[in-house]
Image 1: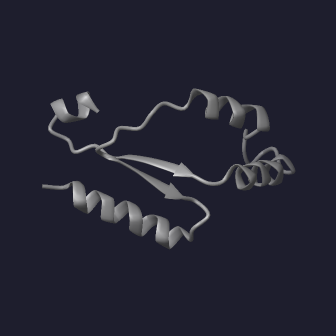
Image 2: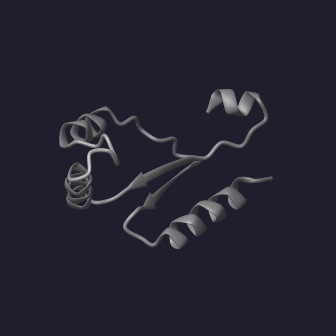
Image 3: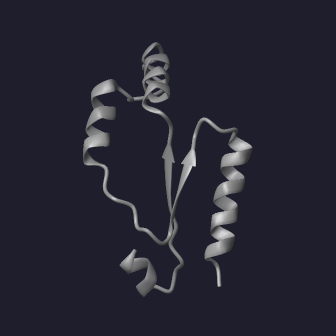
Length: 84
């Protein structure tokens, strides 16, 4: 964030999230076609354990169980709110 601010940029962290049960279901579906994704249950657990806190200002959380159109609208609105 500091680097972005120093460069005159207006950063926005977009955290994509879903309930753990949904994530596990998606991982299982992708495991059936290993060429589609490297997602595995152990990677998901490791990512959850290593997740860094998001900045209070300049970040949003997008629920990936929502429609893509709604997710897109949330991000666009957050970008608009951040611009001077």
